[in-house]
Image (cartoon, rainbow, N blue to C red; front, side, top):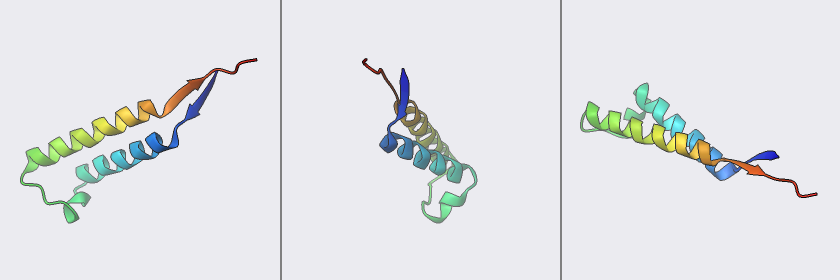
Length: 66
């Protein structure tokens, strides 16, 4: 059994985690102006959820047939 990494999902997960981090540290406010703190929290939750799902989807098990 060999585990491979699907690069497109892995890079998407990294981008989503970066967006979540930027939301927590208020650095994303330079690029996006949220209407309130609830909207920023929802954006953080959505980007974190997307990052976790993409990270889980990026690993695949492959079997070597002999």
